Length: 119
Image (cartoon, rainbow, N blue to C red):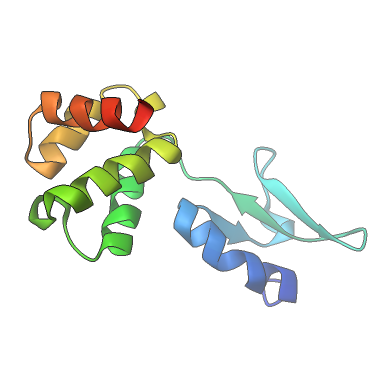
């Protein structure tokens, strides 16, 4: 099995951050993305389901900012909204409402943070 291949090792932290995982080439499914090294498929990337995508994005941002969203300062909450916006979180249905709940702020507050970013 080539899961110990240097390319797979290098990709693993990025895939972990995205919620994706590496699978062996011989168990890859049609929707998996082949990882090819010098013409040989050494593994495949299995993307995470869209369900839970916002939760994974929030978890990653909390890790970067050093704590749960509700405990962050106003400035860090604004930074969290900026990071989530850069990562496409607000293309997801109900993202503003769900993020407001996660941050323990109003939807208007999240919209205000977004408006400040896009000015």
